[in-house]
Amino acid sequence: MKLFICLIFLIVVIGNKSWANPHLDSLVQQLKILESKKSSWENDSLIVSTLIKISRFYGNVNDDSALIFLEKALQIAQKRNWNWGLQKVFMSYGNVYLMANNYPNALQYYLKALEITEKAEDTKSLAAVLYNIGIVYQEQNLHEKAVDYFQKALMQFDKDNNIEGKAVALTGLGEIYKAQKNYKQALETHLEVLEIAQSKNNQRRMAIAYHNIGEIYGELAEFDQGIDFLKKGMAIDEQLGLKADIIIDSNVIAKVLYKKGTYKEAIRYAQKAKLLAEKMQLKDEIKNAAEVLYLSYKKLNDYPNALLNYEIFSNYKDSLFNQENIIKIARLEKEFALAKKQYEINLIMKENEKQDLKQNLIIFILLTLVLVAVFIILYTRKKHFISKLQHEKKLAEIAYLNAHQTRAPLATLLGLLYLIDKTKLQDQETMKLFDMMIETARKLDEVIHQINDKAQKVENEKSMI
Image 1 (tube, rainbow, N blue to C red):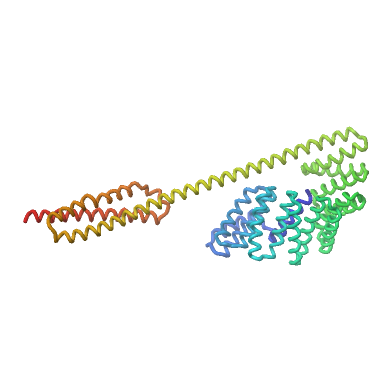
Image 2: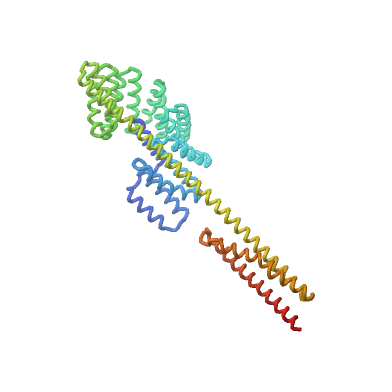
C-alpha cells in the first residue's frame, strides 16, 4: 500500500511539472476570466492548462468531475490540433483512471499520449509516459510488460540526465523483482535508489528506499538488517510527520519481528500500528496488524488475545473483500452505463445521418423538377413564338399543351414543396434554398397563366376577324 501511494505521487510529479497548483477557487476564477476573453491560440492554451489543473483537484475525490473538466480541455486541444495539449490531456485522463483502478481506460489514454509523444519526438515527456504505462501493467501483475516499460523509461531518464526520474523507474523495477521473488536483483535495485536519494538528500525517497530494502532483507531471513533499515525509514517518516507511512512501517517491522521469533516485540509494534490505524480508519492496516497480533499471541499460547485478534483480522479481511467487490461492481456498472450512453449517441448520429440523406434526396428531386420545368418553359416559349406564324389549329394545340401538360408537373412540384415542414430544415442555407424554390415555382405558375391568357387573347382576336 505504501509503495502504491508513493508511486502515484511520483507519477504526478514526473508527468506534470506544475503540480504545485494554486487554490481551486483561484483556478476557477482564472478559468472564468480566460473564457470571457476573445479566443486565441495563447488564451486557449491557458484555458487547457487551467482545466487540467482543476481536474487534478477532483482526481482523488470525484473522478466524474475531473473527467468533465478534461473533456472541455480535450475539445479545445482537438479544435486547435494542439499536440502538446492533447498529450497532457491524455496523460491526465490516464492518471484519473489509474487512481480509480480503471486500468483498461488508463492504459488506453496513456497509449494515446505515447503515440503523440513519439510522433512529436518529445523526449522530455517520453520517459514519464513510458513509466506510467509500466505502472498500469504493474498494478495488473503483468510483470513482464511492466519491466519492459520501466526499463525503457529508465533508459530515457538516463539519456535526459534526469536523476530523480531514474530513481523512480528503479523503484518500480525493484518492486517487480520483489514480487517475482527475485530478491537479489530487487535488493541491488533498491540500494541504487537509496544511493541516488542520499546524493540528492531526498528524505522522502530515502524513507521509501529504507522501507523496501528492509522488507527484502526480511524475506531473505536477514532479520536484524531488515529491522535496522525499516527503523531508519520510520525515523524519517516520523520526522516528516507522515502518519500513514509510520503505520505501514510499524506493521512491516512487526511482521519481520514475528518471522525472527521475537513475538513480544512483534506485538508491541503491531499494537502501535493497530491503534494509529484505527484512529485514521485504515482498514487494510488494521487487518495487517491484527494478523500479526493473532499469530504472535498464538505462538505465546495466549489464546484469548489470539482469538480476539483473529476475529478482528477475519472481519476486516471479509469487509475489505466485500468493499473491493463493491468497488469492482460499481466500476463495471459505470463502464456499462458509459458504453450504453455511447451506443445511444451512435444510434442518434445514425438516425440524423438518415434524416440528412432523406432531406438531401428530396432537395435533389425538387431541384431536378425545377430544371425540368425551366426547360419546358423555354421550350414552350419557343413553340409559342413559332405558333404565331402557323395556323389557328396549331395555336390551339400549343395552348392546350401549355394549359394542361405543362402545368401538371408544376402543380406536382408546388404540392411537394408545401408538404415539406420548413421547421425541420436544419440549417439557414437549406431554408434559404427552400424559399427560393417556392418563389421560383410561383413565378413559373404566373408565367404559365400569362401564356394561357395571351393564347386565349390571340384566339379571341382571330375569332373576331
